[in-house]
Image (cartoon, rainbow, N blue to C red):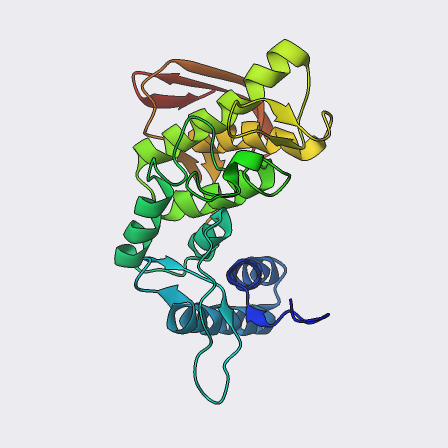
Length: 254
């Protein structure tokens, strides 16, 4: 911020805007507004190009916010890392090579990939030990948004592991304290801030979507990265309540 003005091209806001354009196009097509859908797709494509041109930091191997251009020259990158640097994944921005570098950073055990993910600051940030609200805590909306990007780019095994970690941090608090946390400490996995906050349950929705989900094309997608036996009951899927089981890596829908 410079006074009351946001003076950067924000990587998270631009990525969310691009994702919105993509989904507005799908909605417009569904209701027969095909001209509007085409306009949204054009905006999405233009934003993808801009994000790749302006916000890719080759040195860090990740997308970064960047100060406004000054005198025709690109502004400096903001290089403090947070999960928001991964948000271009949700909008389909990177090519496979760049996506691979982003995922490599996310899964670096010295940065973000510990038992409790995703911390809102990396482990080597000097403020991570404070665990002060957005300084190191785990937030379910952040995990859920990043997971939408993993569904585009990550291997089935990585998707499954991210889901395990997300469900684990929720359930250990739910079963022992009956709380659905606003956020969680990435040091201990304990619930923090408000103990009854509905979006905490997004951690469990990650678990469900990692096993069975409906894609943008309306087709059912099933996870392929699980080795454990899993049973889900009363899952709403295409207008019906279904029973979902995973056995020997295979997902069965009844």
